[in-house]
Length: 481
Image (cartoon, rainbow, N blue to C red; front, side, top):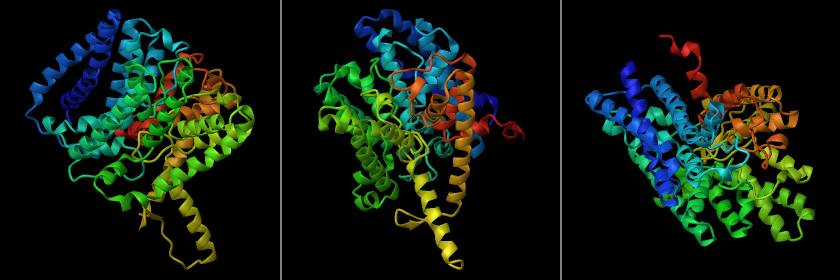
């Protein structure tokens, strides 16, 4: 791919992101926040001008993406989108430090939900809505959205989907990749509308309801309130967000199969069954641990299930300060940071399917010790799994913990204590958001030095793109012909 075609694709993809500026611009206009409008309008117009030039200049050139170019486009686009997302923060004057603005943008698009802001409520509501909107765009995957537009550009998109989507297996759910992207976004949009309406019925106004729907379904965790959902003091709001966080952590291809009436494929899905089992088991442990802290058993149940779902799906919403909970409850939540949601969901983390794969391989190894001549295979969803999946999962896990270890060292040097550095690193690489201690649910990442925030941005991007995409992009060997 030539340099011209590379920049043409990146600019056209950025044009899609800049088009989403229209929502915060409209919000700012109707709320009278006129001083913020130019912060979105100027970069949007500039991107559109360049996009128009690039589109009409090279529209007759056909592009065929290989695995190599797919990795480059995805990594470069996510970095570029994060830069673009930081521009309104800086132009508005609310986040003037480039490292802080980029951190906030990366945290938004990667659905991490970690923030450098000590007071989010001083931001204009349109700017706060943009923070949540980045979760929504990054949750399903910006590239999945733009793949639906790629036939107009003469580009085949499956290589981009493979580089961006989460989980060890990446299969098409419809014969054409553009149809797949449209179906996924139709489901995603439908869930967003439903949650927004329900939150408005529960007492939120439209802007807050939409913002929290963006953050819930994107598994992000940014809120328009300093105290997150705890500020609303509404069990109804918490239950609604809890349900949609839970739904966002499920593989979205299962929703398509459900709509097509393929119920058996959903009920026998191994990852889904384990996902539900973990949430039920962890919730029972946390509820038992926090019972003495609350006057009502129903309050203990609500807080227990809410935070298990929030951490498991890597959303990071807080309805209470779990830093003050007993050790058993905190340890349970900490272990959930290792797991994450399902593959093909908006959730981050290692993913349930990888732990299932390793667990089944462990079982096979134990059987092989007892029966040396036996032949054992891993079964997923009632079918034998490929042997190479185990190798891929093992290498992924090794790389994951290496990046977590490096990030922990960076956080320690940057000023965090041991527990905060370790949990914060899992929160960043796993795109969870809050950790414990100095980076807990009522704290933020503002105290870290700028140089450490740049590494944190890399860690968040690597975690969102399944590690390999960003690692390959910054590996010198990759760029050699």
